[in-house]
Length: 159
Image (cartoon, rainbow, N blue to C red):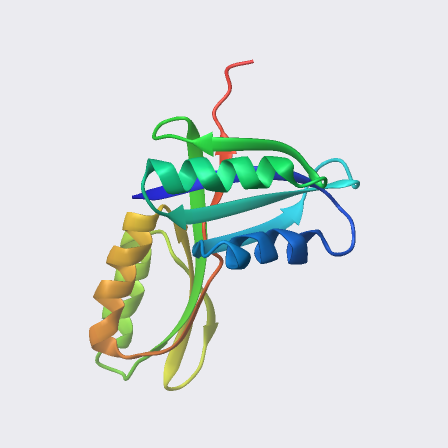
């Protein structure tokens, strides 16, 4: 089972190292990790996706809450958050396949960000299922490079 944790931390030197060290020291595996600034320059938001059952999640959250630099921790259950991932990929094309790749980009609302003679670089954002399906459909053309941001999430709030 995958769990998405949103961790608000102090934006200080060494915080990422301490949090990653907590995971490795206790044998927990991080599926994806994303860190970025918030509106407040003194804080950063970490989105961490971990695999494990409820007991693993319980241990991870208890250990994270013990860390001095952790301000707030949220475990997002389904429908409690909106999430996205960004992927950049380079796909091989030839004159016959170029139009089909571009058509799939239109269907998935992906952006073509660079066009070369033998490849196209594409940016696609969405939830994990959309990203996986797009990558699956691009594989027959030949993906020569790919990078993913990992999941980022934001709590749903009706304020």
